[in-house]
Length: 325
Ligand code: FAD
Image (cartoon, rainbow, N blue to C red; front, side):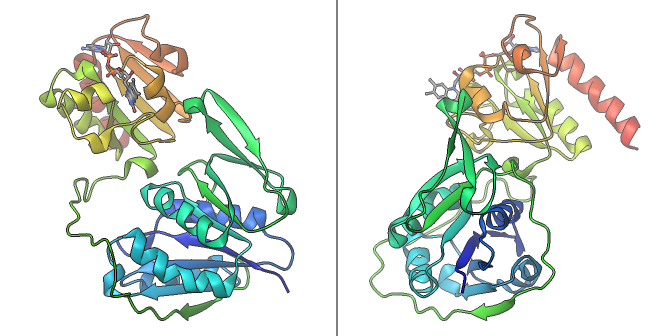
């Protein structure tokens, strides 16, 4: 009898997030012949997400659904998941390397007395031989790690680096897990402010148009937003642009911001400091627009345009409008 390989999935607007399908790819590569792949959903109103995830498991989609779990709180989530983990004793638990996964994974690892490998960007081998590649020093180096055979394993995967899992031939079953919230919670989430509601999620965006100090002010982001709207892209920023108050910190990309891996990254008025590159250098194609031909961003760019972004970005927008009309 095999063990469980469990993905703790995330739900947004009622649907599973893309990164959870990428975590399921890890589950597929890590499984041993008798293992069963299962998914755990924690939150509220999870019916649609559970149905959508059923084809990806041959174990179960476990659902812990309660109004008190609508908003993520590590204390309630850990207490909700704890008893399932004790019963299931999964061999491996995989999560997205997102704000959610980064917070929850060490808690689960502690509960399972498991080893943890975080921020996985590539895999080598499979099954017991599976090795995990992860960046070090803001992406200057990559290391390959493997778990020893003893004990449980917890893994987090960086969004948009691994392919999503394909559906399995024999779908699993739905299981509802009862949850009674404890009375003695020490932390309560009072309010959640969603600043980027309705916009394309930066960490899952296929195209990002990003602005740096070169955009000069908040108004200077307008041409970038117009280009992004035509391309169906998300807007990102350097820390200098955020620090200067041109945009919100939720847009910051880099070592202390979000790490992104889009198919196309258009950097406008960004010099290419190492801390910025740490967040975007694994993008598939990088286009840099900068008026300084010596700007370091050109060293990582696939295409470089030397010139004024306020002339070039509107021209690109017009051309893309014609192309995509
Ligand atoms: P600048 O370096 O000032 O570059 C502006 C660029 O715009 C220049 O190259 C200029 O030639 C060009 N330009 C100006 N006008 C135009 C125009 N009209 N048209 C075209 N080009 C123009 N930074 C991050 O981005 N993300 C991070 O997460 C991050 N974390 C950090 C963590 C630490 C611990 C530290 C110390 C720093 C961190 N930084 C981070 C800051 C980083 O070192 C840089 O200061 C920052 O990335 C610079 O942003 P920038 O490229 O927008 O600005």
